[in-house]
Image 1: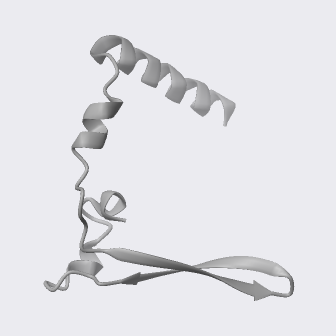
Image 2: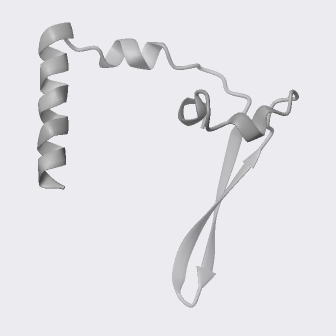
Length: 76
């Protein structure tokens, strides 16, 4: 795990050195409005609080089953 973390940090340092601070450009390209909404609630089971995530308001085209294939993380 430590080696992977070191490699990831080194990759980020190389990218920042080559392209400058590109984090603002990445944030600007994320869609502002998404047809996907997620609600979160908590459930208490034997004193342990468990998060419950539910998707709602999937777009009218019914592309909810393709959510993870194209821009899924960005939508959520």
